[in-house]
Length: 351
Image (cartoon, rainbow, N blue to C red; front, side, top):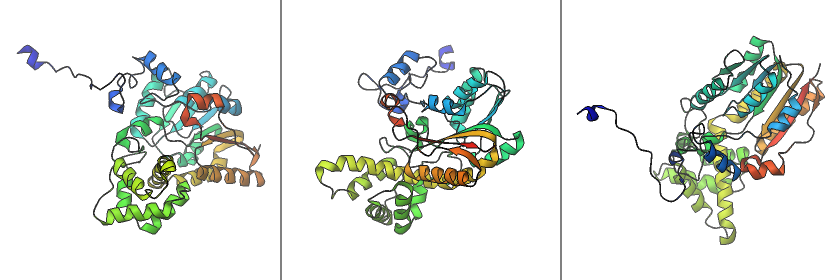
């Protein structure tokens, strides 16, 4: 009887084969503090452990920002906290950092992780808000000596099937960075017109088959077949591109899926509008001589950032800016495949 009253021990999910393939089965990777050897093994193979995010171009960012103890900094996208931790280390306990994130689930985990490393509220303030509100925080604290904006989606979000960011695993077609706000990608597709969808696919991801995809997706929905999972969307894309020659079909479908999911993610999270607002407010948030580094991951973002920094330089707002992009090293790309599309741009606020 006593045993019946006790809470039953919950067994871990069993999986077929030697290594788990599903996100929820990777219990060792999801507990890095307990299974550090497994995590390091996954990283050495050039993969990102489930539930983790490997920060990109940390050395290049720190080399440029030249962070000094006592300074005030801003991390626009907290994520897993890797960049934030690296910048905090440069402060040596003096100064303060502010960080924003719109994902309540992941930011709470990161806050706890950083607190356990000794970075509490005395040196780090985390705000659950969009980074385009940088002007509000800058006004409150008197501006920033250094700013980092890593515009990529964190691996924790991509890998978790419940978030719907990846076409490789089945899950709800959501794609929101904050699932408590706005509408999901599935809801967005429910009412979108063929013309608007084609425009979205072209503008947000330079999709060459935007017309064919828009026709296939809207016709599928019009027939009463709601596209509410990642698998359903992938299958519609595969059927839409069935006319391609067999030898190039597989690779084209993969890249088209990547671009389609990217375009929808940008749309439901209003990413271009947010970035445009951030770039407008950026000069006012930097102290004279302050430095900003920005990581972009697709051509649309990079064009917007490049243009804003170039115009700021012409107007005398920035004393210098990156005329050429900085790319991650070949070694980093080999160790972390998700680094390959990264471009870093920077600027220095005029004195």
